[in-house]
Image (tube, helix red, strand yellow):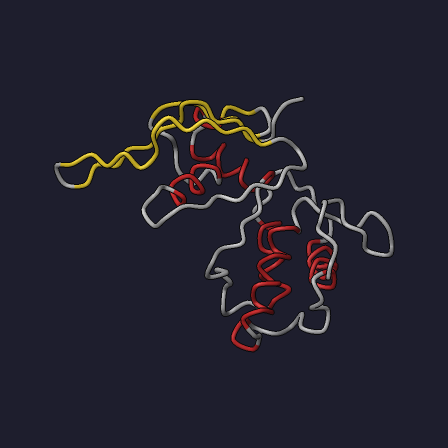
Length: 181
């Protein structure tokens, strides 16, 4: 089976003034479909650098990175942007919601950047994602009208909307989730 993520000998260096900072050195990682992985470590250990690389926001200095069988390190900026749009969803620590947009508009935004035109009704899809995270009654609210937890759920809905769609009228999503407690 092809791993979802495969890193081999991945390194990332930064030049800071006259010094070279080795943020990642020889990282090997394999994540198979259905696995849950946590990236943990002390401040300055390379977690954000690794996440930026995994998210196709940054390129490794050396080594290989395959995302769902695609050699990411060989892609140009536009191809990496397309890959991010098609295969990745981000929930940022600060949520990165656009304050002038409603919850519905924030969730629909990634679909507007879809160059393959896969979505016939982005607002309906965004509405379903917001309903799934319990915000069906907050569609027209702007981020400053939502609590921190509600903003986080908008960001989660935005991350899920590209790949996850209800497979039945009951709203069962095609992703594996931990049961709610």
